[in-house]
Length: 208
Ligand SMILES: [Zn+2]
Image 1 (tube, rainbow, N blue to C red):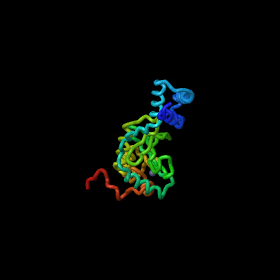
Image 2: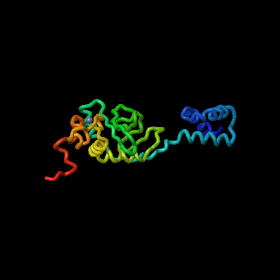
Image 3: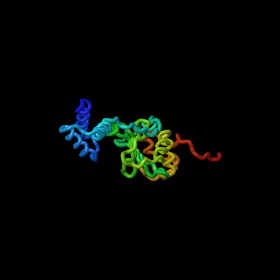
Image 4: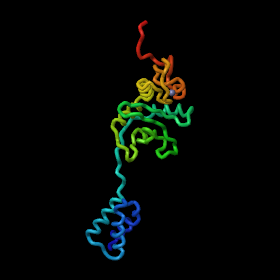
């Protein structure tokens, strides 16, 4: 066995557990045979292939851009002073009800914004990109929705609150005129540092 061949067998042995399970029995038979006798040309071909597969750098996937997070982070920063776990849920007509919360600095995706639907994780906003959870069907509509949110979070939560008639932060029905005009309730406006009451410009100008 030539030096490079013995190196290949060593690499294959060292990375054995990184191999896909379906390839392990085959790899093991190559490793054990190589110890006893030289392998055939075809067998060396497979050793090289398995070594290449297992040592190849992970394919870099281009994650979809969703926009700078500064405005949404500013909202969460304000709410974090008043709530332990600030989150909100928007009813998007095309996607359904989507929940957003910011992960802690010690979470699996530190400081990301987790995006979920009916208690199921869809993915995370990591930096300015969206990362789908493995196994989740990727939806361009959700990406578009997250882009809209990040572009102007205050306007988006207000618009969706007005559409659904509920406060996206506490899910209460918006009943008084000020809440209806804002798209969220008074208490939540205070908690999240949003304009409310006199500071809201009326949508429809009334005749003097
Ligand atoms: Zn509320």
